[in-house]
Image (cartoon, rainbow, N blue to C red; front, side, top):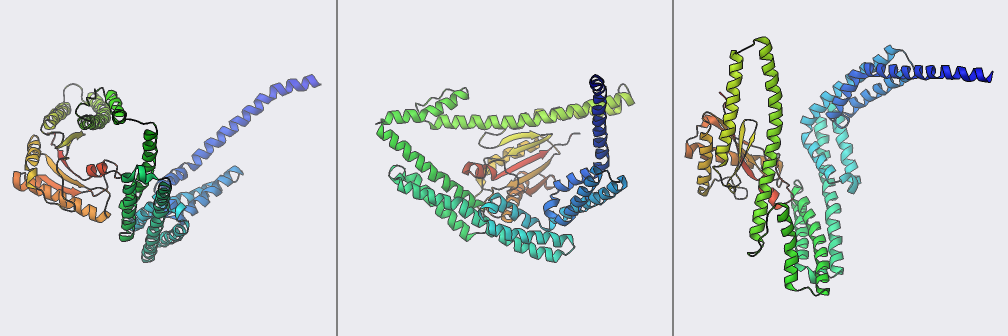
Length: 487
């Protein structure tokens, strides 16, 4: 009997396991079919930030979604499952629409909330954050119910509280830490060994505190100053330790300078350069900076060219295949395609021609699709000003020459700023500067006004880190976009 039981187990166990596996697969397929629409609308709602901006509708959708899952797992009637999923899908769609409206109506407070979150106000100014968040949620709920005026009132309260939370968080996170570091430095007698750097940290800390007090609605600058102060305090402590070590080991001036030169020699070697330091480090550093900038620009251009080439090849292959199948042989469409390809090839040749017009300290030229971008690194403005000085006439004359390479092209002058200052002021300043350059090109070099336009982007399109002086300088720029005609 035991032998018979074992044989039956061997025969039936695989069948039982197979049946269970089959049922599991069928259940999964059934779930995917039933939940397909609800899952898609749920993903769209999450991408629209509906959990934050339309909490009631999104919560209603999630409640119905969870009920559908529970009913399915418990083997309830499928119509009941479908009914709950229909409610969930509708709620997610409505939540997405409400979130899109909130993104417009509550745009200012949403940005302020993001700034506070980036400053980790939820961690360093918890009580203020919770108060602001409570009013923000109230604003979104009022907007969901159609009370736009009430939503804006609550949003105004929330915005003020978020700014206070951000300010408090910055003070705790950066200023308090930096004060502690400076106190530590004083106790460790850092001032004796690194007085310049320590004084710089103290001055930056004072400037950050003043900026926070005087301009509460633009925290970009004080945040950056606070970070710099924190860094310089740590830098001073490090330098003091190194100076102590050098003095203790009786290093000579020559040994110190040679050790100072060694990292530059290694960097030059990595760039396949020989560091000739007989005239000091400045010429070598300038050469390496130029080399790195060129490599970065070339890498960016190659990345753009590669992506465009792949996209163009796929599109052309599909187009040629379609033409061959429909018409065969030589056709009017095929001739038009060949002409377009020839026009794009000419643009690539003309791009090289424009590149040679400018010195590296005048403009950087790049190509995006068939558009030519000239970044005028040699054109600068006085702080807060938009006057185009006469010293830039030779540079802008070269811009005119570049534009003439493409007769009939459209020219767009783009203005950009760094992140310091208010968003609105930066947008206005960037547009005013772009308009000044556009007007100069029209009046001084007779570029037809219907061909040229100006647009300001403010701080919204940075190309470098706003936390460094060099990065901010690169972000304050004028770009000239040439859009050639392909016919």
